[in-house]
Image 1 (cartoon, chains in turn purple, cyan, red, blue):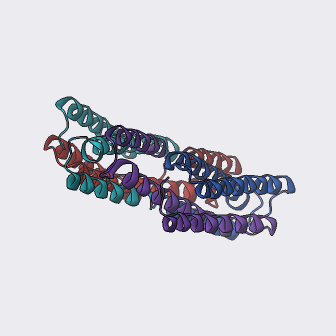
Image 2 (cartoon, helix red, strand yellow; image 1 turned 90 degrees about the vertical axis):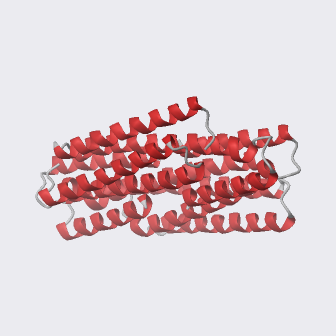
Image 3 (cartoon, each protein chain N blue to C red; image 1 turned 180 degrees about the horizontal axis):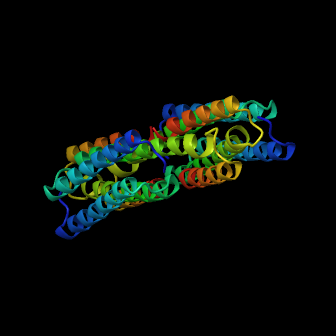
Length: 91
Length: 91
Length: 91
Length: 91
């Protein structure tokens, strides 16, 4: 993934925040918090994962499918990978 | 959408099947079928809508983002539309 | 589904609106509207299906799992059906 | 959440596995793995989060909505919490 340093740092920070949320779920389970509280935090994790996925898909579209400098066979491969991801997701 | 006639017919047939499923839900509601039966049929409708969406997104990627003959500004526009759809979907 | 007449009418009207949206998708495909326009309408159908599903699940919880007058074996059956729906949905 | 020790341990182990998957995503980002590889792992995380959510909702239904020994006002509260979660999820 030929991301710029800046984009890479942003994605890593996003991923670390998700790790922090998961660790919070772990502590809540240990502290026997209520199902309702747990589900609220887990719904937040799910939203954060969707956000990360969305960002990486966007990068993939821009860098590996739409970029003006791509060779057509690389573009075709990028499109095929994107279609696989979409299908898996919308199944 | 510059689909071939064949692709167009396939998408219309898919959409008609979904309409048939929705009409079945309507009849089930009128006949006061159980929630459990209704939810099973509605889950099927949801899967069929996802399938239709997946097919149209695939067409969009191939025709409006990855096609070798696209002008770069059309390709960029196709990519931007695709990113909008993804974001709405993964929100 | 022992819904009241009022609740039943509301659900049927919701279902009819979804049918109308699906018929719009069919016409858009026949008129060869753009992928981007189609995907916007289909995302709307998906949201409407989710809303219908949500309403029926809510009815199911209130009538077949939580209702004070249920016999415990009916309550257990209602809970088991609900768990099946959730699992299918979150798969 | 009045889970048994066994159920609690199971949920904590599930959560730890999700943390491990997120740490793998972090390393993949640092090693500049391809978008396609990243998206595959992230789709796995998403599935695991859905599985955890599904398990906790199941516990909630059994312990806080359907349990034979619940006082009706606790049952009603459990049902209301469940409906909130469902609505947030199906939005």
